[in-house]
Image (cartoon, rainbow over all chains, first blue to last red; front, side, top):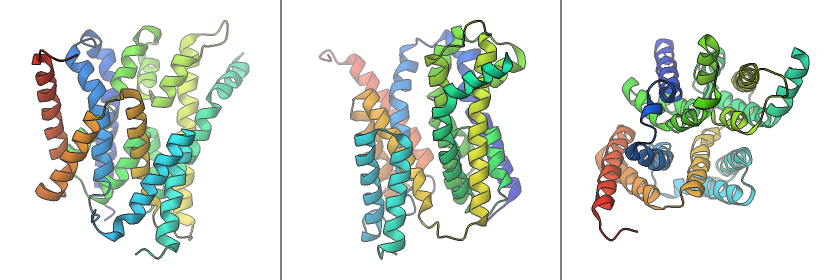
Length: 109
Length: 231
């Protein structure tokens, strides 16, 4: 599983893709920054990505079985924490702690 | 005068430190479960320097995802950075390697500091911006390294720690909703993502869903533009 050349390739690709998103506005996009299509995608694509990535992180789970209840409880904890305190770190660590407690102590497989 | 400038920068970046070190540590611990040397956790903090992308990398590495899929996903995940850059163009006067490093280090948190704080009287703006970026990256790399090292040493059960990834995306989705106040993209992505996952492909779910979503977004916009009753 731990193939070092693959890991290095992944780091290189992610470095390039991340840098590209940061450098694009400075080299080309400032000319078309006001284009309505770019602004539209800039508003609507990030929420779509977050939801797709959320689903992707559960892609190997059976979403309609009881085994998925700890995940749902963890997500609910994140939602409640984030709506009440609006501190990303508290929400992420609190939700993860809740999930870890459920699967380690709660008798879920 | 460098000492006092460093003190000012340190004070301005303390909130970022309290965010980056624990989150970087969570990343490092998660990463260590893949079985790679902990120094690679530091390397990812140094080279990629993007929180969400690095958490995502752990999931992609575990699934042995293809490089094209990784490139497209990372690019779209970080595409919000494009709009940071646009709003900073006028205040970024640096040239050469300084400019390169400022652009490279433009995370969400660095962006919000650079747009909300001012360099102290009489100091060079570029110098201030560089130090803020460098301090922030130092916190992040420190967190990644500590977490990666700790994860390779500790023996307590970390089962379930991978939940930080969906938790992070959940938080980002809530933040996006506060900002946008429209249910459409969220519902659309939920429906498309679930349908692709359940009916088409588990392994290629991400790439296929992204392509369908972009197509639907463009069609939706086309529909809105030609709808004479739109408000």
